View 1 (spheres, rainbow, N blue to C red):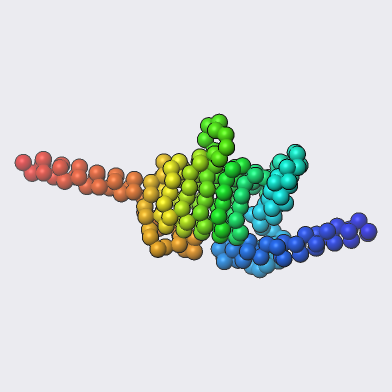
View 2 (view 1 turned 120 degrees about the horizontal axis):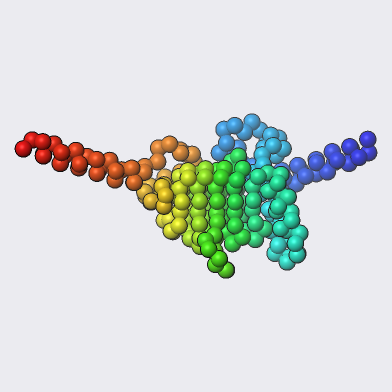
Length: 226
């Protein structure tokens, strides 16, 4: 009985810490996930929030140069949530990781405020570079499911990275990026993180293909008319 009571107290204290110190993350989850039914559900059942909470602790230990423990705790967090965040990564306020399974954030990644990551998103490095080798993500950026942002590049504020896109070059602010490798379609003035629109994103590669098909059809019509 005493053990159970102690366990409940620890759990309650953990929930209270999240409520007090992670209001921005809770609010961002409420705003961006229509499935969120309330604060209690977010605090208790959202692995994305749990991963961010654990990372704050791991990052503090990392900055204190505590050996081994931060990496060990980050691996434990990955086991429990399916989300891998290196203790060295710098993460701003209001990060929302939706579903979260398979999300990877590398050691030298810098993530701004109010960023959204969907399942399978990767902020990774390239090759065996040392130093800053992971992306810098601006404020209010959305990175879609399965997207890969690789190398020491910058994704500008208010940009949207489409699902399964592979980004290996800098992305300007207020842009939509789709395809492999990523192609930029600027959409100035629209904050895609608020719209959460994964369907109505223009694909420049598909547009080029349609243009080519039209040109071929025109040439065929001209040839057959002779």
